[in-house]
Image (tube, rainbow, N blue to C red; front, side, top):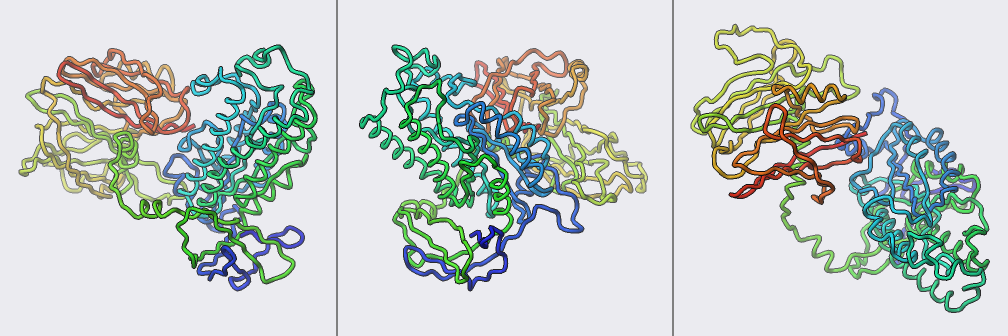
Length: 637
């Protein structure tokens, strides 16, 4: 609940005894009570706010109670170009004056995947994103493959699809935010409202043709004016839209995400321009319908609708206040309904002169949903999800180094193992004297105890004559490599991480792996080796160097270029594709003969790929079957 006094200022001195909760007319016993106070500033003595460099940083920081979360949802499908230009200045002023160092902001569009939302504390990047916002309301020119699928559909169908895309995105956003934290989350929904109904003047048989798609030319403003048929159609269209919006309300309320509708039109008497020749009654009806969708989204999710206001500043500032001071109450329903129906919640204050806002109720689960939720079904992770999870598991348990282990064919029926390790950068705020990794030692043995390899990097093989007081290695400057051959079968690896100074062991780890047999005539692949380059010259140097050390990291910037090398066995043919995190194919990736260091290579620029997580799938097909290797990558800004 959010409580304000008569001047609109938050009230923070209430106790549990000051509240009453009523569900469907029956009083409920409050069992949990908590006041949340967050101002967005670090506590005295705390280190500076942590930058969000990857998905792990996002999950850690977003889960904190002293962090406010805001997501700006740019509904470009329902904002005219001119209005999108006008709303930029108040949004930028809001970011620069109202937000604080601890605040976290995300940017989303209707077609942004929920796992592709990039959260940040860098307000300069948020301002840059706001400046790029461009509205496309009633502009049906396709800008991607998804929009091309329905570009030639009637304009009414296109508007319905756009509504569904936006509502699906809002549901997904609310669900993801709910998985990140329990506290309040604010969604700034920048939109002129969903379009439930188009007047005859804007209906075309082919949306891609615009006005040219209208049969007989643009109709008169009197067409459809005072028409009972048009009014009936508008009523049913609006009713259908509201039934679909219910899923948005449910998802937002279940995940404690409040939607704040920001209408960039300001105080306006018209929905359509004079060039669109829409009659006054139809124009007024359309304006009212779009504004009502904004009010409903806000009212049903405990947000606010900033509608019919030329000055958006006060409304935007109220969003911050709502996220800074609020109460959390918890109770167990005396009825415990499982009927799938809506149950009204009323919150009352025993003190007078105060205003309280709270969610209006909840949709109860059905008996079938409860049974399904209580049934534990073991889920087998998909290969793509397993590959993406390996980005996190590549960090050694003690969090001093990141490792990568690859295999390729060796001589005499053996398999060559390559271990790459990289020192991890200390997190912001870490002590200056925190130990850093300088060397990794490896002992490899078979299941029967036979020693296969013993060595360390950056040093060569560990000499048995070395004195026990040999000084520790200096901090490694980049990826380090250990290479040895082993027979196929079970193998135990003992890894020891030594400090950069002093030679002491920081941590140790035991891994048990299965070494593959790559000598069979079947189609097979070596483990792909990934190299990163930041300039064209650096890429050319890597491509010509067969001994270049690959990287263990799988987190890259869009300014980088990847060189992926691998070997194909069994006379197979190699192909590659880029997959999203759901395993859906996004594009083919060209495979070419390697200039050095392998049989094949992939030259992959990242500038054209959106921020997010992906998998490069390499497939080798031969006469005796096929083999696949998945390379997970995480792309940042």
